[in-house]
Image (cartoon, rainbow, N blue to C red; front, side, top):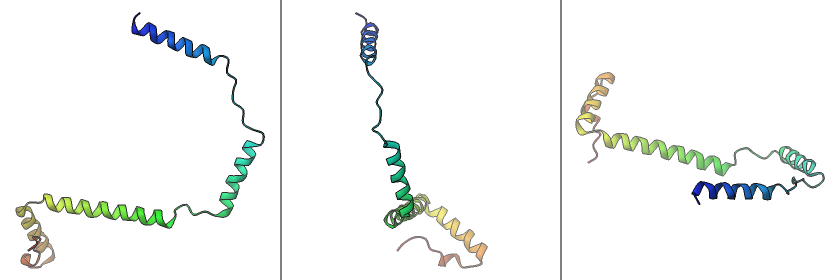
Length: 104
């Protein structure tokens, strides 16, 4: 028996089994109870952002920014760092020696 034929037979058997099922109906007043719960939550004035979630979100954003700066600085070669320091010093009129990016 080819694989497609077996698949077709299983599909037909499954669909025939579904023919006798009735549609599920919710219990009486289900939608009314759901609407009441939603109204109670809105009336309670629950905050959209809990303080813990807000602090955690800000921490993740800060961590991502710091890691992005670290990766960019790591990728700069010493020559690129020197060129960047010189161009920055020229623009701001400072001494390039004071802009040493390398750590001792």
